[in-house]
Each structure stands twice: as C-alpha cells, then as structure tokens.
Length: 326
Image 1 (tube, rainbow, N blue to C red):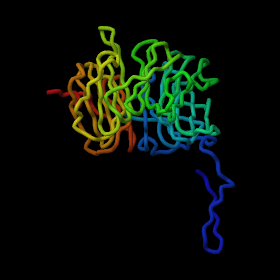
Image 2 (tube, rainbow, N blue to C red):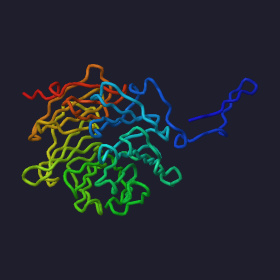
Image 3 (cartoon, one colour):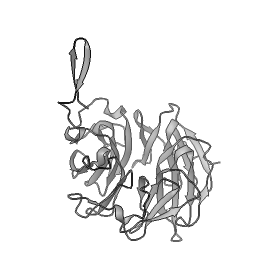
Image 4 (cartoon, helix red, strand yellow):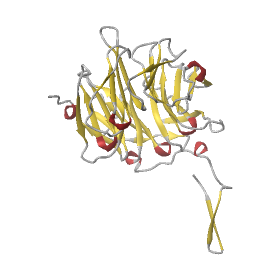
C-alpha cells in the first residue's frame, strides 16, 4: 500500500490521495523473493512454480535448487496456483484476483478481480478440467467458472448447495467429472457432474478443513484426506460415504498435501509439521522441521525429492525423510 505522509506542526498526517491499489501495481523484483512468504507450489512439466506475498511468483528448472522471479502484473498476495499443462497456468489471490500465464510461468497477466464487489475477500484455490474450463473458489462461498480459459469469469455460486455461504478452501479432482471442495463446519462439497452442481457431504467434524486430497482407488472408490484447524485429519476410502478420524499427534493447523509414490500422503502445516498418512489411510507418522517454520504447500519434484514452501520461502528434503513407517 502506497501512502503519502506529510508532517505539519510536528504531527504526522496520512493522505491517501496517491494511493495505488496493489491490483494495479506490478510485483517488484526482489533478490530475497525465494525466502519470502510462499503459499503454494506446483509442477508445470519439468518446471516448479511457487506463489506468495506481494505478487511473488517464482519458477525453478532444477528441482527447486535455484529460482527465478517471474514478471507479474499485480502486487497482491497470491494464495494458489494451478497448471493445466506445462505452458498454461492460473493463480488466484486477494480481492479475488485471477492471473494467467501462457509461457510456463515466466510472465503473468491479470484476467479478473472483484475489488468492487459488495462481498470482498480472497480466492483460495482453483482447478481446471481442461485448457478452457476451470473453477476458482474462496471465502463466503466465492465460486467462479470459466469456459474460455479465463477470458471471462462468471459467478457460479448458485451451483453449490451452500446457503450458509461457508468458506470454500481447497479443491481436488481424482478423475474426470468428479471434484471435491473442502469447507467449514465439517463440510466437504462434491460434484459428480464436472462442476455443474456441488452437493454437501457431512463428516463427523464441526470445524474447518483447509485441505483436501483425492485419488481414485482400484475398486472405483475415491480415497479422500481432509486436513484442517487443530491438526484434524479425516480420511475416507469410500468416496466420502464414511469417515475415520486419525490421531495426528499435533494440534498445529495442517492443509497443504500431496500423494507420494508409495501410495501414502504427505500433509504439511504450522510449526514445520509434516504428517505421512499410510497408503491404507489407517495410521499417521509425525515429522517436524528443525526450524519450526510454518509450511503451506508441498510438491514432489521430478527427481523424487520434496519441495516445501511457507514462511521463510522454499525448503527441500528427501522423500525418505518422511516415509519411515514403523
């Protein structure tokens, strides 16, 4: 935020006459961007792309060892990023901003923002089912839909059975046509028609889920992992028809997650906590980074190693460090 501070008679006065919205300012190059607050990281082909505060978007072509800062049209905080292929990607953030890249994350342009809407707030996640059709979600049931690669975005809230306007935190799609959305009040929204409608599923929890991980099992049922506030972790092996709560041995908030090559899941969160959920979704092994810095997202690099982001920027470690089940 830019302000003009004037001093009159020794008393500072703040004027907003020269205020410029971060949505209208490009992100500034910073040598320390790799160590700034980063909130999401994903693969884009052989490249890794991370997003975070101040409009920072960085990409790495060497498994997360070195990072280059992208050219970004806004200076707003970015909360999530998604790539449909190795070239086409989108990112979402504060004031419901949506950015797009067509060059593997090197440059980003703004497609949409909702700064003038009555109900303000950030977008928190997104998912594209093709290069043309995608969804973006956020607080107060914010739900947007595009059919033209983001050239236009339409309000899609009426397609979710969410009359209480619970926040929508995270999205995951195990197979074509099925989408899961983590929410508040122990709710998980599910679409079985490719996003045309979303129905609520109730778990045995009454709090918020900030992360959801989904994959299709060999029996045709979806394996689901829901993570959230207070270290809560719920799993389902039958597409959400029944749920089990696992003991995480922590009360730290958890959200970012990924499937690992051995079939287990890794969930990261506050205090540097890392939770490895066994392939059968029956047990949890807790690990913790020595630095204790909060983690927000994790991705498996092409070399099989892990790249984590959060407060303090990028961290890397070997998968073997978090998969030693008893």
